[in-house]
Image (cartoon, rainbow, N blue to C red; front, side):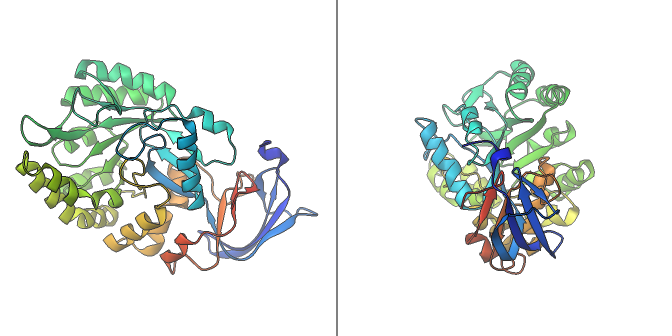
Length: 365
């Protein structure tokens, strides 16, 4: 595909979100403009124009079962499934596969990478993470920061078979050094956590985001709100906690009990985080046990947990884009937009039926 500058001149007319004003928007050279473009083809007339959706936690390159995909063709199909759902930007929270070559395919969503998962030895899904001793973590964080797109992913906790329950992966000193190293490299840090015990050290060390966060307490939520630390709840994955509990119950009954408790309180945690002012973003955890292209389900889950419908939509669109440094529907911005026939703020079910979709100024759906 040729570059965005060769994209055709287009015209769209509809209600532009989040402002909610009916406007005429043109596309010239792959970018939005509010100045009329003579000869532009009208591709949307009426409806609602939503800045391209974001899946803020997914894994392009991880196949069903938690193994790396066989080749880039499989990773490409995952990205296309996201695009079909209106997702035009992905924050890839750890992948064992180098997907950088996909950046050359301009009809695929933008991928913002966090590099490889970083985990303690034998404390995560085999084959997915770089496994490290604590004293090597900070240096590897620097490596991943330089390879990624402004993010680094730590595994903050996982089951510790010696204790039979979730437990932190790193001592506080290693966490502080790792997060400081990433920030020195200009990268933000996020961490997988299910339980509570690992969270205080991560938050106090200045981590930028928590993934899942089912173990958050009211006190920890207050500390996150004060620091501006975000959370991506991945409620579609949390829905699997009872299954995880059942699978581990015979060998690890304490772990099974913990996972059931975390599942039961997950909605209340999300609601409390939002009410406290913690930035909440939509991520599906697609890859492994979750199929790609289900952002609409995650948005609905956030709403069911207690977020107002517009806040849940913003968590997968304009708010998430701002958080990741991506523009919305504005002068000079890359023309990444999804049109809907009905107002998704009033009916989140509309997200399951994306209409005309523009990516880098070209109609891709």
